[in-house]
Length: 287
Image (tube, rainbow, N blue to C red):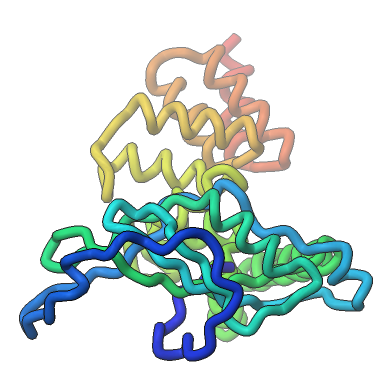
């Protein structure tokens, strides 16, 4: 997880690497009180810091490292400084990874300027990642089981657990939460947030893919696009999302394509969904 840190916390800096950014005229001029400053942003993180064998051998499982990155007016990395170095190869691992990251520059009244960007990076060993992932999976499944009870107290507890897992960027929780935000029953309807969560988890959550189908179908937060809605629905169906299979089956029934409808109803009927079983029986009776 990567978090921006207040620059005031960066009091002791060490481990300076790379060449300094050229002097920026914008940084030497006092800012008027009305100036609007926007911090630089991370655009992509194609490489992530790796835990080192030295750290594992030392008995560590998780370590936090603070970096201060100096960015040019174009968002190019000029310097990376390590705050309170960890050693054991972890500092170098973090620096190597961050060197591949892409940033947008900070701006003052919309004009790009040189800036410093503070990062806190958590490096986790593979064993710890597996342990954490298993705990997240267990907590997520327990939350889903509690929702089936339809008990108000248990439901509130489950939603809280799913929200917490989503904050930790657990993809399954992101996808399920996106669907809740689209539906607007257990949580206030919020398609904008749903789009953010679904887009974030798209590669790792079939439910997130189906949420994107719903959003493109309705045009909430994105342009209404039937072709994209159908594409996402088919991807979600292939990944085993029953809601997508039901929708596709009903869609093709309405279009007078019983063969296509039967194919999708067979998929969800095999998962013991009664709606699909009844629809499939009705289609078979029309032979």
